[in-house]
Length: 198
Image 1 (cartoon, one colour):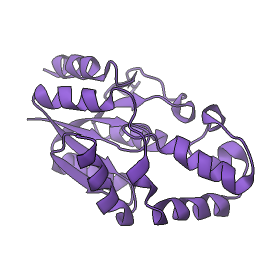
Image 2 (cartoon, one colour):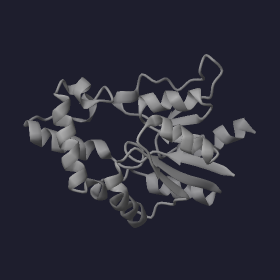
Image 3 (cartoon, rainbow, N blue to C red):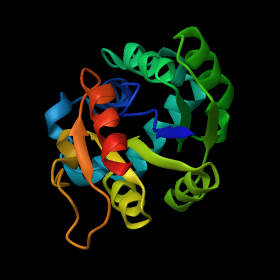
Image 4 (cartoon, rainbow, N blue to C red):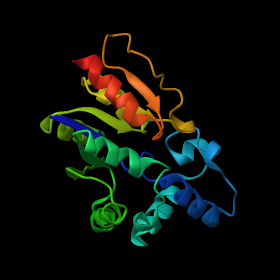
């Protein structure tokens, strides 16, 4: 069975644009996509963490997950993968308050889904992946990309300014490879990775 884990925000859905727009509105600033050079906004933008938390709470309370834009070719890529026999598991760190809006959005966008898991920690993502025989994931968060690879799970990285320092090369310790890709070529990259594994 070919199981693939897919993170939602930053991989399938454009969380960053909408969240940054809310942050700019709160701060009276004009930060853009390339200004987020670190995972945490407060590190990239030099703002108080409490402001980021306040805006995130507002984001969740206003069910903004229902209105996120899907990345170009993500829906087509996921449907193509499903047609090729891959089982798609969404593994997300969205808060539990976002479960219903998330499921509603996935269904309305016509995304294929074998399973979905809402977790609180990076370690829970690893546990779910291992328990469901997921050998490859699509992810954007720097710390979890490294953790997946350390646990023998291959990673396709959706590249953003905040994760460019993670190189798409074979790990020095012989661990699994991380590849950078966008949805236009992800099905091809996945097919190649699975062929290399057999």
